[in-house]
Length: 201
Image 1 (cartoon, rainbow, N blue to C red):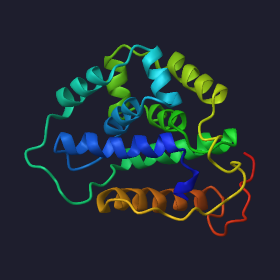
Image 2 (tube, rainbow, N blue to C red):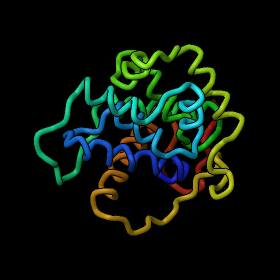
Image 3 (cartoon, one colour):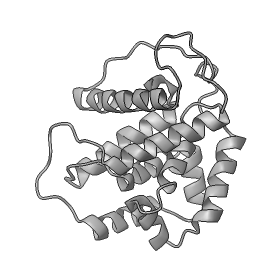
């Protein structure tokens, strides 16, 4: 199911993992995903955040102030927090509603859809008005959808072969893949065969 992510959103998730590792955190939370979306730079999320005056340095400062750095580096797989997983579920719903692949804008909408997550707390402390910000993210996402140049049409399910990746990154992508497949089943979208069509919502 991970093939429904755009290149930009895949990159943002990998960068979120890097943010967590750099702080020696034992989890990937909504705050790390927020930082990953900023680091990605090309997608709708980065454009909306930049237009709202949110910088990577400011987000990192708030993350450290709220959570502090961990004591020891973690070498094994870093799990997502329940709130980060919920953010992916909300992102999938946003993408399905628009009939698009899961882009960075959808990931950001998923984060801000959780009123009490750390990413929303960070944005609030940086002076972001979430109501106006949500409208801006939706406008960016709808005006310039990601992945149209390289991806199949969003309503056609195509299983792409997995490419070789470093083990920690592949483990991370596998975890996301499993979780989002379960979410698809919950939403009534059969994640099975390659010829299934995603129903309009």
